[in-house]
Image 1 (tube, one colour):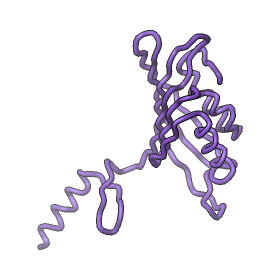
Image 2: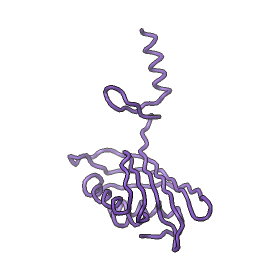
Image 3: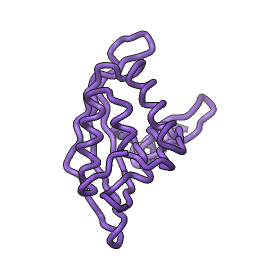
Image 4: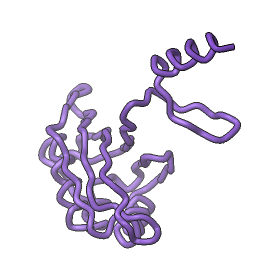
Length: 162
């Protein structure tokens, strides 16, 4: 377990571990009983599962990927807790067939606790940014991403044609 000197150090620690595809160092940013929710809502409940999921990802989905983390925003909650948020940009993800999958952007939220020796992540959530969308809806054909204002324009136009 890596204790961090400052809450924002979790961002550079994540970027460094990711770019070396080092699941052990990445997992060391987390407390033993940490919670992690990934971009599609998979939820891991401890450091061992966080490590295992990322080791699999580095081997199959992100073998040569690079992540760039933006400057973090830090909100201290009292003296012993902090929320750290940052945008990220990822290149180099591959499809199950090994083909390039395109770039991605997202926002990462880390919740840290100050313990003896420094800061440690106790919970994190990673969220993809889907450009041009506002939310998801379930339709008969499956889940889709929409933007309400654009959808309202579509609905208004289609209702006029009825």
